[in-house]
Length: 280
Image (cartoon, rainbow, N blue to C red; front, side, top):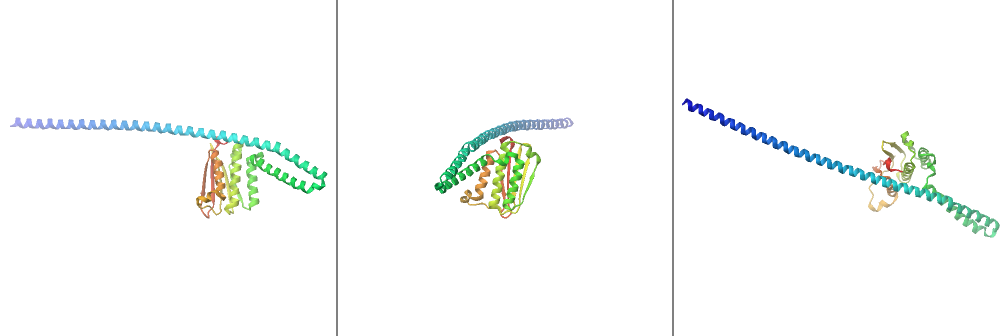
């Protein structure tokens, strides 16, 4: 009896050891399976991360190429504008001046033709003034003394003509950059922004801020006027919308970003950010 009981105990112990060994093997297999699954997941994540990084790099390279292409096109356009302005001033302007002098000489020698000559000379002088306006628009005279003088002069003239006080907040290092493309872009956009305010905003205060970061230039023009409401589609071609569209086109040509924040009755803020490497 004792021998049988001992054998039963041994069988139970052996069975327990076998069960424990099976559980241990099962746990080891499961852990190994989980480890392999985790390893495969990590490898997949690494591949996806590498693919994403490659895609982001490709996108960045494409953006740089687009910016460089836009900059090259802008440089060509600016060079063409300067050539046209020079030709208009030196060639057409000289011919108009000569024509006016000859007309006045004709009028002096032929008093009977005085009225006709004066009328023709008036048309010539009007054409000459229009030509000079075109030349100034192609190549702003205000920028001959640099962006700082141009901006200060522009704001002073705006306040004098509109009666709206204008505050300028600008970082000194902004004016250290003497890139003609940057200066012309800022000047033209500020000019159009102030013109929109004078015509449509009914503002009593305007603030202009120009700041430079490591690789961009930021321009903000804000007023406390009537603000804007979302117009119907037919209104997008008139008034202030045309001015904003022109500003947006200039900013887009420079590879920049243009944002409009406006609430009816609480004014409008135009914010433009230009990557410096793309403005030439």
